[in-house]
Length: 103
Image 1 (cartoon, one colour):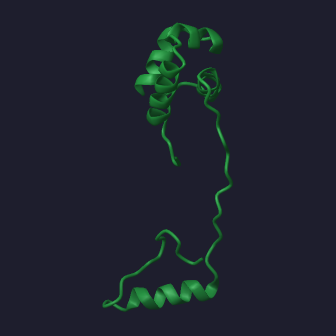
Image 2: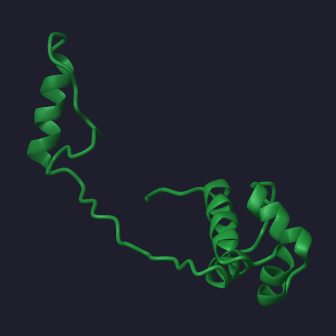
């Protein structure tokens, strides 16, 4: 999976917590927080939860976080010029910013 938001992460935490047969109270104890915060995190209603708590909750249920470097490079001058030519031609569809563009 990629591009997870906090709501999706909370759902994954709940799913894995249940698979491991852990209670919200047990996860909260492992994270050093109150059960209510785990409940809010799992429901996607904790918009101000700290990164430390999210990571601790993930670890408590057997999830980990992987940081992957985004492989982006700015377009070359030639690629920008080619895109400008496409933008000026109404019969052709522009591809600027589409996945895989300029690779």
